[in-house]
Every structure is written in C-alpha cells, then in structure tokens.
Length: 201
Image 1 (cartoon, rainbow, N blue to C red):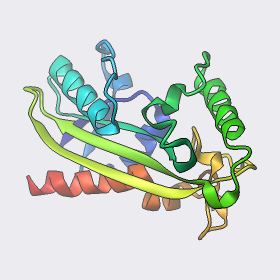
Image 2: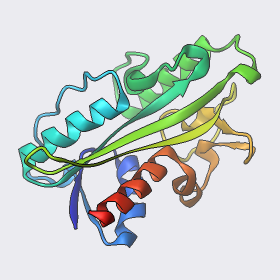
Image 3: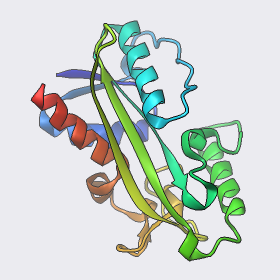
C-alpha cells in the first residue's frame, strides 16, 4: 500500500519507514513529490487537531492517501508547554539544528529552578490517516515518558531528544540506538497502532 507521509523531516521519515516498510507499506515523503502542495496552517490547539488538518489537506491536494502527525513535548512543570508550539518554542529562525538548539536552551532556562522530582515530561505523537475525499481512516496517539535533564546528552534523534532522560535506561532519548528508540518512542507507538488499524480496515 502506498502512503504519503506529510513531512519533509528526514528523521521522522526514517522512523516511520523503519516500522511500516517491513509490514509491506511503501512510504513516500513530501520530498518525493514533483510539486509540494502549500503547507496548511497548523492552528489547532491539540496535536490531534493539527495532524487531522495536515492529513486531510495533503490527501486532497495530492490525491494520495496521506498520513500526517503532530508531535511535541509536554512538560508538567510548565503546564504542558511547549506542547503544540514545540517546534517553534523559542521563535528562532534558521535551519533545524539552530531552531532545536534555541528551543532546548529556552526550555532549560524555564525549568532551571525546578527540582528533578518535578521535571516529569513526555513526548506525544498524534497521527491521522486520511483519504483524498477527506474521510479519516484512522487516528492514533503515542507517548514516551521521561524527565527533563539539566545536562543534554546524545547525538541520535533530533529536537528535544537530548533533554528527555529515561530513568529505566539511565540515558537520554538521544543516546538510544535507533532500533531501541523506535521500539519505545511516541512516534513508534503511534505508527504501530496505525499499522494495526490500517490492517484491520
């Protein structure tokens, strides 16, 4: 089955392809299209709402069944922020690495006085699969829990991965090997749930 994954983020594509390809799905990204449709405005106040907006918009524009996600970090001490604003939390411009660094610096500054016991957080990923006529085929949600560390560490992953410490593994998300991260991450959980829902349709 061909599925368009509505992202140009190579890290997200790698994670999703690693899970769906062995199950028989051919995953295309926006970068594979001859013409990339205009990006829809993500103005929903939930991850689910933004995933739905993107899936329906890109499916309608391309005529291809489309999978979209919205994901981010929820920090309990910040009342769930950065949440849906995770990717642009610091308002920084520039390439992805520059924006990630600015976002991480802002988060660490905001929680610098919060003790470790109050630094619980989780990555959230909401996924939506839409057909070109706008019918929502399936929606899923995955989470990946940990605590925010004061000492970023690790080169794997992207975004806030170097900050999410996993007590049971004694390392950050960015220090996990790709296979292990896919096995337990928020996106991995959402994709596996999506695959099982697609198979049942």
